[in-house]
Image (tube, rainbow, N blue to C red):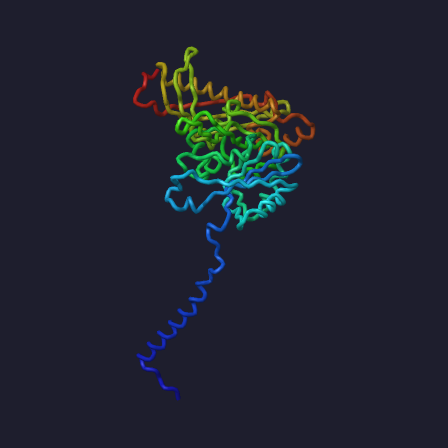
Length: 393
């Protein structure tokens, strides 16, 4: 018959069991022998894609993350270093593999935050550009995507302000600038893919360019990125490019618009600057003689930013309504000049009146023409006029 343990012996036994379990667990939690330090990995932050001489040209921008990590803000006393890799091959995958040959260390694509597509690649065929990025598991579908006609290698070396890294440029952080001055909405890659094959949907791909005149650093030109317009793509085909001045109306149709300025005139001279915000947009369709007619209803709130003449609040509102109406119509006509449907009215018809859309497609009748928009109703409410407000009339 086994001798029964005393309470003291039982406590000692349990302590020994715990000690043994602790020692055994040390062999499990120390299993990080294959970890790679950050300085031993090449992190690609931006991909550039072009198409030259029937071959793809792949650009890969590398940043020194160890230098960024040494400061809390990501700002250093020295200009951040940037490495640009370039490879040319018949496919993007082969170009990517050519980069590996001289990359010295493992290359990681998991930190890509922007994709820049050259105009030649857009003209060649958007689908060719799409396949690798959409298929390769290491590249997420959340990067911002842009088109450009600038040399991509030069674009990838444009510096940020205050010795910040390229992580603080417009290519990788476009949403802050859009929130402050809304015009061409930034597009993420998954949004780009989702709209690519939607019937009657035109994609507005922001065009990234270089401004070398606005900013100076110590009396020397300091180039910075800016959005100079948008490429318009319909079911994978590039229709053309429109600059910002020809796309002013798009901001009043885009529900993502935060705020954007307009200048109103009185008696032929500038009278005030208004900031219009957060459009509420409703579109309706009527069918007349078998053809769709589109009606826009736009409601905007606004603030008076600057006054140059004494104009009543109601006059400001009515003039602003006219400016918005004209910009919406002019942008539509500018897009028609390159045979594009900048407001994707055909897609609206496809979703709401599918039978009519199918009939028009079968008959080869143009779904959208110069007379498609029958009415643009705009309502502007000025909520704030600042400290100086003229008598309301």
